[in-house]
Length: 182
Image (cartoon, rainbow, N blue to C red; front, side):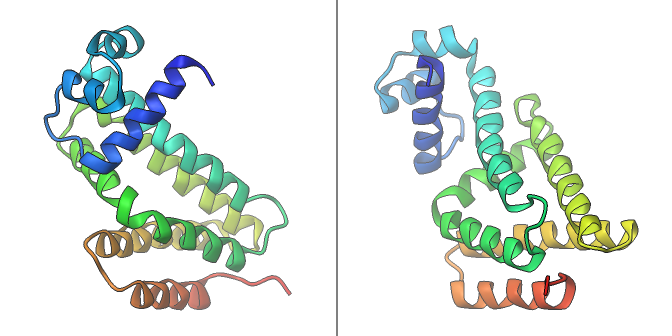
């Protein structure tokens, strides 16, 4: 892992724990044991750092999603396994996700790649459900509903919601909409 990647990893962890808000580069640097000059050297600006945080966060989730959606995986089991990982991370990762999503909704350029990542997830899930035997329109509807449900239930969990109830909601969705391989 390069020095930039190591620093970015520490920054992501710091933002996950502390939030983004209007935090200065000096505050972030002190929090991760670096200097604001090193942050500027590696990321160019606060916005460059935040853009790197968005991309690093979603790239790691995308890699895990790709593993779950490999050819031949049982769609039901893959969906449940992916949900469990998201739910396990919701108390710590959820607030950062929703803060970054709000920044994208407000049109902050540094968060704009989040729209691309969400679209990529929709396309990956749609393709997965097509390979599982659903016609294209149904596959896209299932994928879109799964993403929307996940975001809503993750929001509830991040606010201290009931994990048992969240798991039950996801299981209900999977049971009603996702094909199991025999």
